[in-house]
Length: 136
Image (cartoon, rainbow, N blue to C red; front, side, top):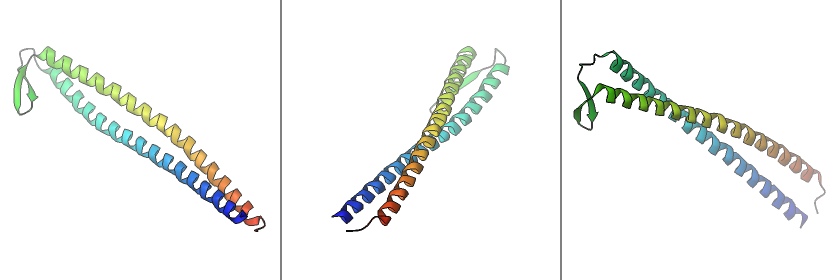
C-alpha cells in the first residue's frame, strides 16, 4: 500500500514538472513570435521611411502613383504623404507594443523557469526522502 502511495506521489510530481515545462515552452514560443513580428515590422518601417524621404524631396508638380493591386493610380502628394506618415506612426506603435510583449513575456519566462527549478528541486528531495524511507 505504501509503495503505491510513493508511486502516486512521484507520478503527480512528474506531471507537475511536465506542465511547468510546457508553460515555459509556450511562453518561449510566444516571445519568439513577438520577436519575429518585430523583425517584420522593422523591415516595413525601414521601407516606409525610404518612401517618406522620397516623397518629401520630390517637387510639388511631380506625378505620384500608388499601387493598388496590379494598377498604378495617380495620387495627390499631400494625400500620399499623409498616408505614409500614418502608416509609419502605426508601425512605430506596433513596434513598441511588440517590444513590450517581448519584455513582459521574458519576465514571465524567468518567473516560470524559477518555478520549474524549484519544483524540480522539490521533486529531487521527495525522491531522495522516499528512497530512504522504509518500504512496506
